[in-house]
Image 1 (cartoon, rainbow, N blue to C red):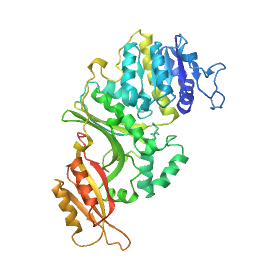
Image 2 (image 1 turned 180 degrees about the vertical axis):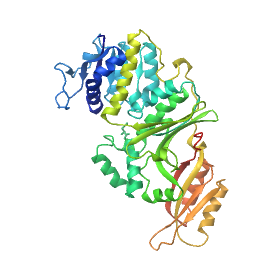
Image 3 (image 1 turned 180 degrees about the horizontal axis):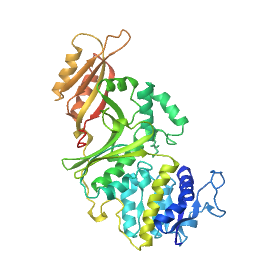
Image 4 (image 1 turned 60 degrees about the vertical axis):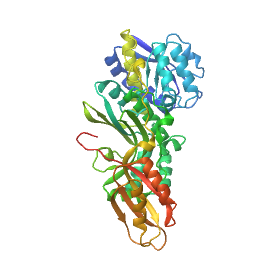
Length: 440
Ligand code: HSE
């Protein structure tokens, strides 16, 4: 049987998962591909730790050249992570005429344009299904399944750790810090949990999604990013009383010819399908002009789901190799030559509804002073809750606004936060509403 020789950089959780799935489903994959994906070399700095899998003698090496300079190896799998050594490996592999499969969202978010161009120059593929949503085939869905559509918007729960934390806070009423500790004990969080909880991991994935959807470069620093560390059970309870759940969403939309790209805690109706996505699961809700709304749901992390995505790329590239085809699939969904810069909308220009929780003294006239400031900034109030008096601290006044401009809301809060009646910095959580039928 024909063999497709591959080399793998990084034998961590995902690398081990890839080996497991290739071993378990090798025969099945051969029936689908008509060839065997043959691992020729695995390079890792640590080649002594027992990973609980059987590895043929001589397969492991610490020398990158054992893959990069092996003329037989046709596909390089980059599972190192980070943006340093991984970038060198990907560039060298492409320059050496090898196709690349990577799970590395940070690398793509920061250097994607350079690598897509390099792949095109060398007439090789760079594939990255595993970089977003683990095992969910979202890249292929956008790049191929939805290729007939103008993508209008994407709302994604793309970080399992943050979703797990918010779910536990919602279900158990537990505070953020306690749930984060538990998530780390379960091994859900990244080595540096700030990537998960501060929205950085989601921003990496959203930058790649937006770039795929709209055919434009989206730099990481153009993605407005806010994490979940300031969300409290109190706000989750208020959200519930308004019929909302709080999720960390990656949102990208085409609005008036500009791309919005933002990651932040978001209140969404508890009736939406996305609101039902709990625990470590991920889901990506994509609206296309022809297809309408479509939802992709599944495991966003873990050895085997991520291996599933890595191997799907290996199979896809192997099919091209077997058919002698080059350049069939543009890596980022649009031909490189037809990718066009589209302006990324300044966060200040975004319009949405807002949940605002003010902490003020309890005395007559407070509500009207706050309402007055909001009115001066063209912010119209949709509902207000003020719960009972508290002897021991500020009184929460909670408002939901009608659609307002972020700039106006920020300016208004700067004013209200400096009023002498204000005791706590105002909590702001954005709301996204969409109709079920058309997802808009
Ligand atoms: N830390 C990530 C998550 C892993 O929690 O979703 C997958 O990128």
